[in-house]
Length: 235
Ligand code: HPA
Image (cartoon, rainbow, N blue to C red):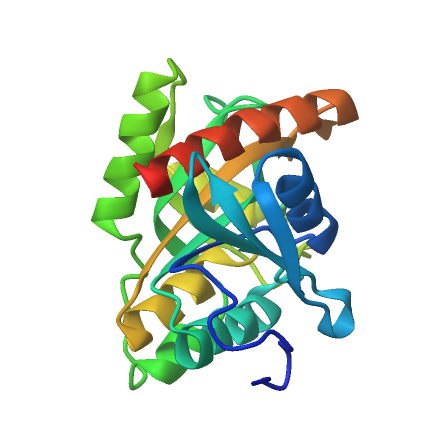
């Protein structure tokens, strides 16, 4: 069995797939955190792996950047491989004064400048929402680990290099916690296909003052977040 973008055999993916943007991150999670991890797909080097965490089967797969790329993999994983839970694990920028580098943001909802959800929802505005069950599971696992979370709205942009700096004032006035490029599309796919999704994001950039998380902190911060997510999805 293969799809246009995934060459894994039937049954190769677990019910739950963690979705980092970077396929190298998928490999890092598989080799550093999972037990018995096997690579299951490599089309376009968009690597996917299945292994176990505390004895429970779980998969990882890179999605690339942006809503179109992420939506392709999410759709094929659900339609062709029967995946039921899609968990984006990535980074976001922030322009909010009260959100710090290294904070973990759970995207309860995802606003966007993309039109994909209007296209799939008859021209109307779909409230792009995370699965409550997954949000609660992540919140419970974070509490267990003593890790504070920010839970709220993010903004999924089609433009990493956004031409209008006033966008960030608008986001701040509306309490948006983070800016990334996939969650709204992922939540739209999940709504359309009747599966669960959530995006859990480490804040890697402060857009206002161009501060970025140092590389070493990126690694350790991301690992703490990943352990919480893995605990949450296997609880
Ligand atoms: N913008 C969009 N996506 C991102 C950012 C950002 O500043 N940081 C990490 N992902």
